[in-house]
Length: 553
Image 1: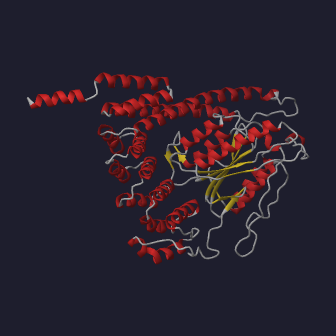
Image 2: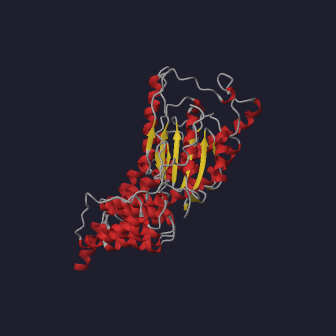
Image 3: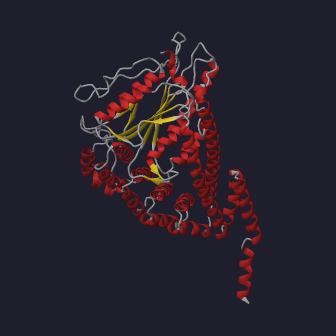
């Protein structure tokens, strides 16, 4: 009798199949319609049921979105190649309005057709990415045992790496008691770098300072992938335990470029002192303070000395922004408006510790147009790069052109190659910011859709533009921020932005001021979301000379 009663109670307590079936049907319909808001709403209902079939449905939906994106990327590349092959059409600025010469009309029409097709495909990719994000948010709202078991199995034993990464992200949000152990298991055995980044980011969100978590995350500071080292450092910073100091001090001794700077920043936050990236100074400091750290009695001293003079690393600057990287791509706007005069006021060139001018200080500006200043700042930055550093340059208008298919090693010959190429490019056309950034980010990852992280590759991008996007696969500023967020989620590339906006008092001031304000908002958000810095310029007087077109020079 008692057994019968228990079975009846269990049946009554469980959500009826009809409710589950309805929720699944609603979710699948929303997924078919590809409305992210509806997907989020239906996904939340499934998550609230806390049933294995419900969580399985969410994970399957995520997998279908990821598969669809992979297929769309094949189509996207085809359209992109056609567009690039026909993007070198000429524009006659002597006519009013500017026109396409008769000999280039066919090429221009092919470009427009491919551009239209690529935009349509990119829009679909954006929608599927939004759907993926909505599904992960729903998974992150799961609180019950059934959902946690599905996610734990997925992250530790799932066959598809993208589903494993999604499960890891969700586990970082639900705070289930078994989530840390599952994430640590995945961190030990998963071979896919992008999944490991997702796992570390999830542990960062949980902010657990147990010895097991600290040891596992700190161990990634020695990983071959720089993205994992960066993710580990950020996680240790969020966790905030002084137990992370020793592995960070060990790691900074082997680090260079951006890694050294970011390890130093985390150490400074944790300890309250700053040794400016000097590994020897950090080691000496740790040896003097390790007993206090281990006993829990450490406190920062206000008089703590920094690194010895002359031992901090020299940094490259671009429009005044420190570029502390040895693998950098400079992305410069060369649209028609870059012919306009610039009001940029550069800071005085720094000198080395010995009083000698820094590299690049002898490079002179060859004009007052925005493009002239951009070339000048670019050449100075390249000249400041240390021997052997990796670099590349991208210029963009409506088309995107690259200095080299592969990253170049800094040397006298490659510097000359870059300077010669830079001087040839004159402003014309529209502003295709997204395609240029997407091209730059491709140097950080391989695969058709950039899904495979590279152990080496660009870790910093410097973008300069003078206006809002007007062309390319994604032409709305807010959509560009969203797409770059998705593309850079596991790549971890730092993006600095420079806005050389102007407001000509002799023109439509209100319109120009709005574009400047919108541009600053766009570039600030882009930099902030990707770990970079933003700088910008302001107003030019009306007496500035009119810009000259390339053909009139």
